[in-house]
Image 1 (spheres, rainbow over the protein chains, first blue to last red):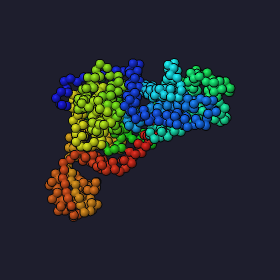
Image 2 (image 1 turned 60 degrees about the vertical axis):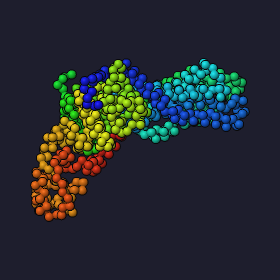
Image 3 (image 1 turned 30 degrees about the vertical axis):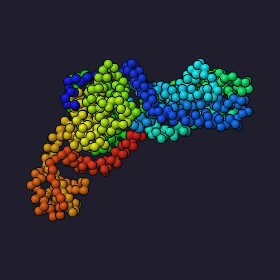
Image 4 (image 1 turned 135 degrees about the vertical axis):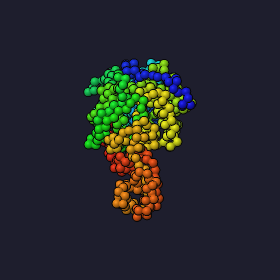
Length: 289
Length: 331
């Protein structure tokens, strides 16, 4: 087989010099790889849903008894639903970013690093792919809206998906930025525990952000996730029929020295942070030998 | 580009990691179409050299041109014209064989119209066409290696680098891998630069350079190198090796070495020497063997140790230091 047929019909291909088009092709294939891997890895789809569902249904339903008065009759699951929408995306996006560490450990990163493409194309493809995968995961949580008394309003669902996409992009960029410096998957998981869990708890995903003790209020305002959870909650609560006191207690909005941040500004903060971290990730990746 | 240019030209190439010099000034040239082997124990500096030629590591000093392009100033041009098979496995196990190759073709910007035909061709050459839709994680070590070799050839490189292509494979798989490499090399008319620490594999090369402690000790065809040893290798097991070495030096003027638990030395026409040995050595001999020179002997003649001993002792300690320095410097 190897000796007979080979010489006559060798197809010769050439590798053209780098162009914008070839960079876009590289971004596309790195992006597609994330999607293919996600599709092939059904276990991951299930496992990364466990935590958000625990928070939503176990913690939410369990603490309901204690919080009857505080929530003015709103189910606690409904209250924490926007926060859970955010953390689902966050956990999945972090997992996507972790694949850079896997790729390094299992050698595939080298295959990408020696290709005649810009390192930035690889990082951008990775971030977009991670964002897409995390948002797909988020769809499952969006589908559960009815179970927590949130209406299936097309505009609302579209808005949620858009916010998830944005958050997923920023978090993946953040994760990639961290992952590039780390060589072992265990170390990455450790760092994630150190960063992700505090970010999640402080963000206000599980509590209203007004009237917090001073130190917690301060931490909350410097937690980037706060600026993703708040617009998500405003969006969802905007489509709920609530009494004025309930709205004031549960959806107070984020303030800076008494000034209410507009939702658009919060979204812009998340996007800007994502871009900055993407830039840092690219810079770091370029400096890697 | 000049048609008469060498496929690889290296002049006084050096690489240091901190205080440790991994490659201490190597120079050589490889002609187009040649299979050129870098031979030496682990830690001799082979992989570091290959990394510099592949633009994965920047030389500390010296210069290298691959496929007519400078590895430092024309990095992308070098990358477009080389294929790589790394020592460690670099496939994505979650993807199928075909998806791995497709990913490579897209990253290298291979003309979309030709990709499918070319992929089929390289997959058939390594006997994996039937398995193209299988996830790579289910492949055996030998199949993964063959797929990596197919991938290295996929974009029709001018020079293919193989870093220890058969490491960790069983002898049967090793020889089948070599059949594939040779068949591909003939069909594609490309230059192959490879490293190995299996002496028998060096026989596949047109020329070999023996590397030890960051330097090229000798460079020539396998046949010439073996002829240079010019003597048969005699290995004896004795009751007292140290006494035997002393006796050999004293009575026959032979410089013998103890390696791998036996006394080894070289004499012209070994068979005729054996009767004298028994008669005059004065140390009881347990067993004796005489062999025509092999590349192992070439290595021994030039470095004073067998390749296995060299790996076990100081060199591997040095290797660990280099590895440590490397992992420290590249974040």
